[in-house]
Length: 487
Ligand code: AMP
Ligand code: MG
Image 1 (cartoon, helix red, strand yellow):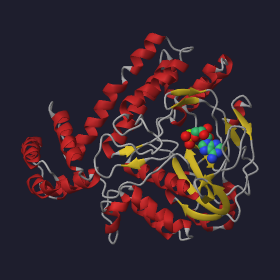
Image 2 (image 1 turned 90 degrees about the vertical axis):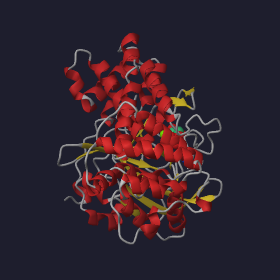
Image 3 (image 1 turned 90 degrees about the horizontal axis):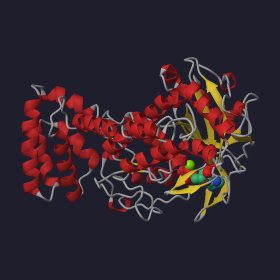
Image 4 (image 1 turned 180 degrees about the vertical axis):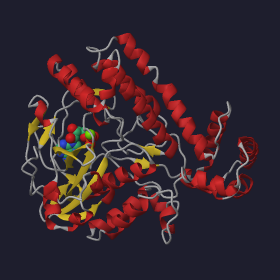
């Protein structure tokens, strides 16, 4: 276990130099205070969890202090936003403080979001508000606990610094961890600004540090791109299987590691709704729940375009062609497991699709349905769940098919079935209304609810005594919360 001053830095991205990022110091927040910290994320840096409570912790992650070995940098990148190309974006309100390597030999980027203005702030103030910082913190740690690849969050630091959005709010910072903060948009930036040398340097950097096994392949860059395609397909399959809607799948928010990244107006589905749009500002529904699958491929095509100096167009097209099959394989595998099935049959895809249609028509809670399906034997569970459906005849037909399929799957005791299903079907997810309750309390200075909710979400598959209220469908006020980009 380490104290805060015992971290070891190795700032590999900063060493790429000024063409890639700009030195900027964090702008401190007034009266920094700990809102919430993740012990599991602290463990990634070998940090003693007790240090979160020390004043120096809030000073470091509230922008007041810095390690001598840290080299805070704002990264430059560009990206396609809602389909249109923006030639220059970059870290407008976040800084890569440095890269820490832990005792296991892993490097972790320390990225401080809400750290003040940078040369890439454009019209923004460089700040993040408490509300969005809490949402990012909770989502990062909740996704990780669900087994969905994600950036991690070490802590949220609150403050008395006023920040203007639609109304006056308070500034906060969230410390994000990832093995890399390089986005699709990094490659696009050097491609469209016609800087082939830097682009090659970037590609070498990513290959050497993040995809070293691809070096052994006959065409290392192509192997790396294939790997990126596969990781993105797997990540999006998990989003779809668990009902996660990212909200702003612009290419500047897509990680080259295939992790969920740059949270904005994200949401987990309450009622199943394939057409759900979580971002109030996404008028066309470009990033609606079901569109996430084709958009994943669209984003990979934008990355492929930026990689044309290194890889032939034919090879890129072939690699892009792997996206949908990879996606479908991962998605179906997870959905089978959510249904409690251990074998594969040709018709399983249809069984899943037909269930989702019924859930869509009746507004059935996506999370609780699967959890309850495992609570009791298939026959008993469908009898109880029947009441949630409007189209009873439709559900009965599906239930007969499901029971027959379960019978063909194998001879398991209900105990085995429940254990297997509960291990993939969460009881607790980060519902918007739960986040909203925690935010309202935190905005009035009470951080206990954020901390409790975070604790519950770190063990989403385990029933936790006294936490029943976190496993409920939203009340009416919590069903249609409008979340926009103004974070
Ligand atoms: P996002 O959609 O949140 O990923 O942000 C898109 C771009 O806007 C990125 O370059 C961000 O750094 C920048 N940005 C977002 N909010 C702010 C802000 N409050 N101040 C400065 N830049 C911002
Ligand atoms: Mg972003």
